[in-house]
Length: 334
Image 1: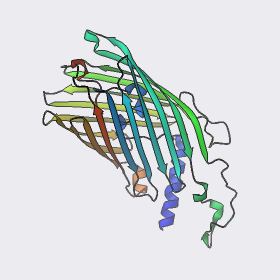
Image 2 (image 1 turned 45 degrees about the vertical axis):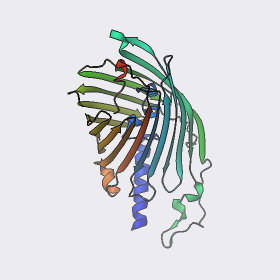
Image 3 (image 1 turned 90 degrees about the vertical axis):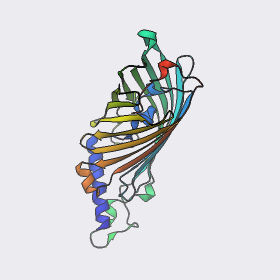
Image 4 (image 1 turned 135 degrees about the vertical axis):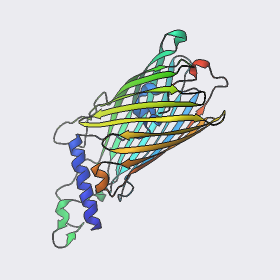
């Protein structure tokens, strides 16, 4: 029964992936922690000299070989209207040893400012890097290695031998971001749009035709509502589309100042037709620790024995000795 369950789940996942038409990119519930995935225009969008962010996602932990995705990024706020950063991500999944590794460099131009004191900002970002995908052929099992009577026998020959087990391609992306940095306002709006895989690199794993990795379009927006001197609420939305696959997320979080150097973050996101994700965070001085848990609401969660996803993130900002007033609000954390 155990092997039948694994086989059924694998077949379901393959069917879903086929129906999504090359939805290959990893995704995070705490997408705002990994700015290079969301929008390269977010590079350097913080009040400080540099930011180091790490995130780890474990998805479908009840499955024998769950999706595991750690990512790390480092970005810097430059002094000449240019911000820059680097990031890396490594996703592993499945019994076949599948790996999805990315490494990017990002650059953002911050010189477009207008309005009173230049507090209305438009940022343009670019990123370029490599995507490496691979799997271990020795860990695969195939249908013609199963015997109806004796079951699976690894010594049985198979005709389904993959000829390519890894691919390395150049990848380019771009994005734009608008935000209202005016301090003391009751409402500060931000919004952005990005496109990943602009050059549409070739998908070497598809041999029937020269398939391209489909571009991923992402839109995100939110508004920080200042309720009082110690409390703000930030509703936010995110929409992503790659091929025929969609991700729609809506949510909100509250930021409560407990002391001068300590804040509590509480909120939740809903990935429509997929999951509800409560979030709790703790901000102290220059560090932000966040934890979220995806409670799966789709039919896939029932088949996968209610397996859900867990994320933990940690960010550190090296701040300037004196913070300028217009930088009190750069971009919300969610």
